[in-house]
Image (tube, rainbow over all chains, first blue to last red; front, side, top):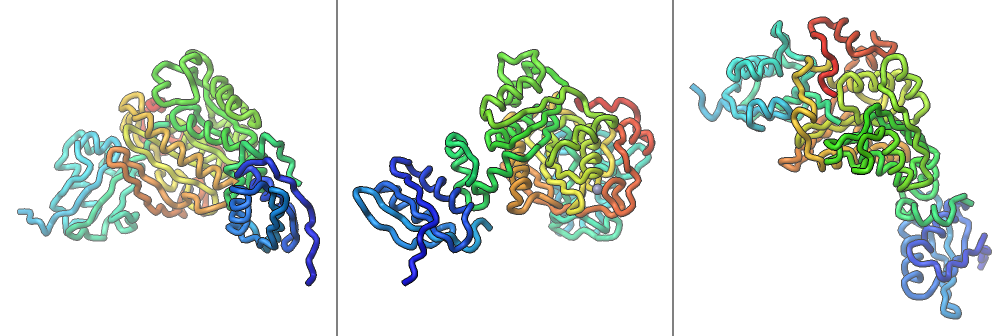
Length: 83
Length: 96
Length: 278
Ligand SMILES: [Zn+2]
């Protein structure tokens, strides 16, 4: 299994919805398609909302790992973002 | 004499609606061309309405948009109205 | 990495979330330049929404001062602004909503001598004028310079809106080759206007401008949206480009800005008094 390392990591613990997703999205927009980002968000709403928003824009959730009260979400940037 | 089968509707906007006092007027104009219908309407409504459709020389104002069943009319002089048709008359609005 | 500040990320978050906007779209808005002709009933909602949206540079053309009778619909201005130039009162309101926005006041009346210079500085133009002479002048200047133009007119409970993109659809003169004879179409001053109707129609213009800048959706090109506030209905009417149009047609005869008086003289038959609308 060739797990490409995430290009960058955003620590969004303590950042409320939807700003955590907005910051993730801004970073994704700057990345090449196929590259990955890891974001760390709080459990609860952020852990549900950020992956859902990412998927709605066509990005792929590589994994989401709970760890010490936070969640590490690895997102792979979609081929084409905005229509 | 007019029967229901002759009726077409004139949908009026802006100052024309105000002067006529109705937004939708039923008139027995089926069989006329759009141009003839407009002239007839001006005749019937009189001097308050005529200047909103025709200039002092009797030419149709070039500041009107005329629609037949919500489409612009290319053949004002030739296409004949059928019962149930709707003519819409729009004047530009200056207000801002 | 985008160079939004923390404050901007939060301020524009509801835009950035939109798939059709995103950070790239928001950056486009911040870099864009829009000219609003008239800081009145239409210009107010347009100015408020464009400022809130973060349109980076907003030019405002208006030569009037705030009058008490304006405040029923011209929501850029407040009671404390009475007597102040509308341009300055509007600038204060808009920059107060969003300090990212630079408002450029043009405290003048547009005429054939200045219109090209004023329009040249902007990407998109909004016609919220209150008179026909200015509307034809702005249309002609936009066609000549290839600038997209959001056009709207209001009266009583009605409004018309269309979007003019030269080369892609009809212009104002295609719709109405000639202004109506003076005095035929009353002004809001004479016939009245429901304030909220100005808000509805101006808000549509604002949305059209934002779409044009973002390059999204289908603008009202070749369509006239007719709003009837009493019926609360919208009708969309397809309006073709006129190949014989004197400005945007295949062989234009108006190739430089022309004042209304002059235009009427050329056409003949229309008497004096071009200022009936203001
Ligand atoms: Zn044209």
